[in-house]
Amino acid sequence: MSYTLAFWAGGDDLDPDETYLAFADDLIAGVGVIDAAEVDRALDGLVGWTRDANFLHPPGSGHDGPAFDVSIGIQLAQFTAYGIQDGNHLNAVIDAMHPLGFRLYDPQTRERFA
Image (cartoon, helix red, strand yellow):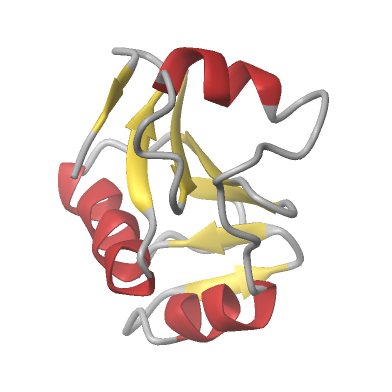
């Protein structure tokens, strides 16, 4: 089972559900452009985590264990968790993205958080 965390900056006055779906088609006015290098630096700061191409592995998981499939687009960053059982791993990703000005959108609950 997977669980997706989505992040973007700006667009606070837009409907989050419509905005999330619109990322597949076009750039969204009022939503910031992502600096992928800045996101990479934030992820590199996660102590004990490892990267393998687009996969981000929590401490102790190894390359065949639980992981996040990381997708950094022009305006949308998504982390799809596979095999993640520990909520602290989800929170670590959220905590890494928040200082960069990205707000979490949870597509499973259709809620955007401050």
